[in-house]
Image (cartoon, rainbow, N blue to C red; front, side, top):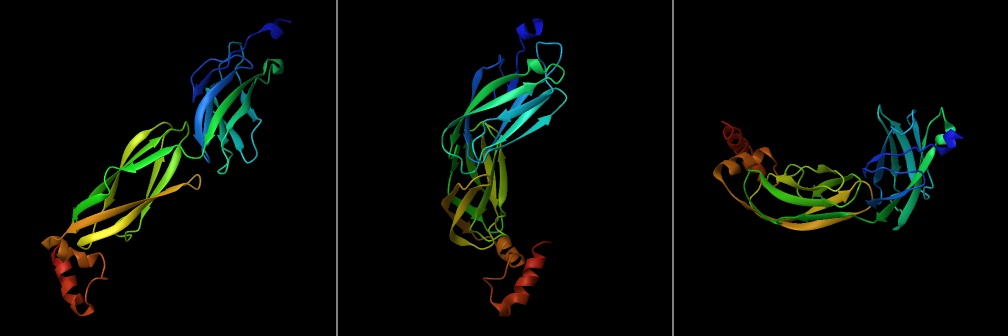
Amino acid sequence: MLASQAFAAIYPVEPVDTKLSAGDEISFGKIARGETLRIIVKKKSDLGSDWVSIGVSGLPSGWEAETVETDKTLIALVSVAPDAEISTQRVMFTVANNSIPSLNESFYGSVSVNENLLDISFESLALNASLGEPTEAVLVINNDSIARHFLVVKSTLPDYWFSEKTIELAPLETRQVLIEIVPHSYGEKNFSFNVFSTLNSNSLSFPAKLDVKPTLLGMFRAPSAGFSFFSPGMLPYYLISSLLSFF
């Protein structure tokens, strides 16, 4: 009879730090398709025995869940389907104590599923550079989701001008990312940056322009990066000039 009257509080700490009673419902916030919702609950309870496991139920079709135990917490990882319905979903979480099964408690968490929660832009898409010298474009990203997200930045430039870059964004993070380009021929070049999500089908393309000024050293070093714009008959002379430019 005493056990039936006992109160066992539940202490989520991520993505919301609060105290819950059995049957309470909490709104976690917004999440995008393909992301993973990370729910962390303290093992601590208001009883003598701590929680030892956490379970997840009521998931929509295509969603998946796994659990992880640490010394002081229980973690539920809920993966949203890449093609999940745009909606608000309600999921049940149950914390359990094996020694006293009658004290197992459940709470509900709601999450708003969105198609995309990233705001992506470049500070400038008209870039100036000197031949053979690195220049940087500034990519600004705001993640309005309660979950991590992963992006890949590619371009239509040659690989030896720009190598694709992978970016990891923390929940609710805003950051600037420097995108480095090293031009190997001079003049004006039109190209595009392409930003892809690795978690869903979202992608964006940003037309850009690069104005490269020639320099004496850059022109000497250009043959070491590629030969597409050289006359084959002049190749030995350009190779010699390229080697000499490093001394």
